[in-house]
Image (cartoon, rainbow, N blue to C red; front, side, top):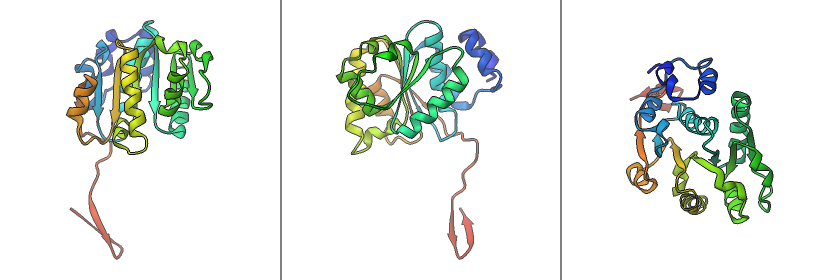
Length: 220
């Protein structure tokens, strides 16, 4: 699917940014659009690394922000990943959205974030913001959960599960986009999120499996 085919479904400002980098949508992105991404449907996207999951999240977040529906939060598991996303989003979308990074002091409500549109946070930081009753949380209309398979992680899983549960109670009308390359039970998780399931195996570089021994690789 060519990007221009969804030109009328996304804000002009967003299209003008994306058309400079993208001509054709990747398979997972096409499936997401057909499953209701641009109609604010909840989605659980399970596709390989580098298959275009982030753009799916960006389309949901920036469409909502530009159209005035509310803020978007992008939840990641690691501070390093949060910083990387912040740099990428600020570089691409600074002219249409105010992008913020919130990964620091967990004893603060970060009230200044009321001025920002797209907020990148770690799960632990967002948990703290909720416990400190940050007033701007009620303005969130899009929730993106990167690496959502960490729900199964013994360390981070419980915090993330409680966090998602609370967000769903606080923000009943918010669109939820879950992203992951590896989920063992995608159908069950999609049902829990009340989300449409997007599964695709396409990847930009084909993987080959093999065994390395004595300087030689024997592929399957």
